[in-house]
Amino acid sequence: MKGISHFITGVAVGTFFPDAVRASLDGSFILVLGGIGGLLPDTLDFKYARFVEEPDILVDPHPEQFESQNIADAIAAGIDKVGATHKKQILKCNTMRLGPDWWQQYSIKFDTANGEVIVKLGPIVNTSQIPLPESLRQHPEGRAKIHTPLLPTYGEFTTIDIFSGPSFALEWRNGRVEIDFIPWHRQYSHSLFMALLFGALCGLFFLLLGNSMALTAAFIGFGAVMGHVLEDQLGYLGSNLLWPLTKVRSTGLKLIHATDAIPNFFTVGTMIFIIIFNLDRFLPQPVLDPLTYWLLWTPFPFLLAYFFFKKFETDIRSRIPLLAQQEADLVAETQEVMDA
Image (cartoon, rainbow, N blue to C red; front, side, top):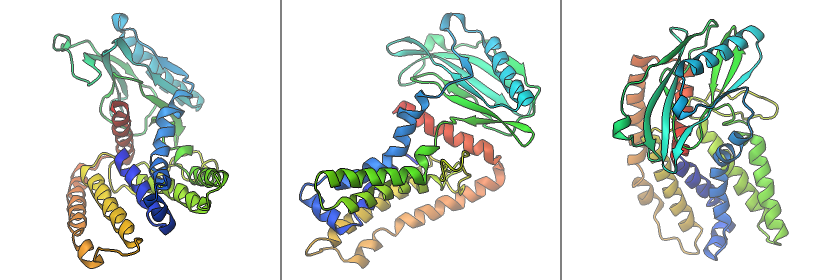
């Protein structure tokens, strides 16, 4: 889900604690802990984890000497090496920056059906990803044959342009090579361990301040992180819930994609209703009538039901492989964070 959905879910978690609501009305920042906890897992991934990863195969092209065929050959050779040795390889694709606001775009595609890596040069774009008109022209593609079977994966071009480029883990699984997009994402940061750790740190912080709400702060911190993790479990990828006992990201419930507009709208709207309701009911004299108030919320579940009906129809027609949908989620979520 989008960052705003996770943030407001974290705040909503905090409003279930009467002492936290009353303290916030007196100026306490305790409810802000919920918002911080809701954003924490993705913040750790995109602000820290991706920078400490050590690549085995580094694509670091120069805009004036871009050799699409050499890049395709190097990536295909890395995949074949995994097939021969069964040892994991990390592929990192660097961006090509031309100036303060200009980037040279290029794209990579793993063509599972034909067993090829395809690399092509794109236009010059600014930081808003708007192309320079005179750079919109066709360039020769680089194509390299892969001699190792691949698991079905994301079938579109992955575009590398602004900020920091993506990475891929090439791993041997069940007799084929799996291309795991953004392998550093949703690992330790999206786990029960991280929820417990953040909750403990929140409680300790309030304890050191001599605040009597240390236990409440701990529960809010824990609940906010777990809210984020559980929301991510609704998608196609899931998280590494039991890190460090497990090392593989789980399969989610496959109900939504991270960028689906209606589920995000439903989450934000519902959490706003919860926050307002909880703030009111813990007042000395509540003013909202619960029945009337929640009747106003009823369009939200109907909208969500319509979304799932249309999604069910689409899924029956498309029959896109699960792994491809997982990788599509990662590509979309990463692009959102990089563009923010």
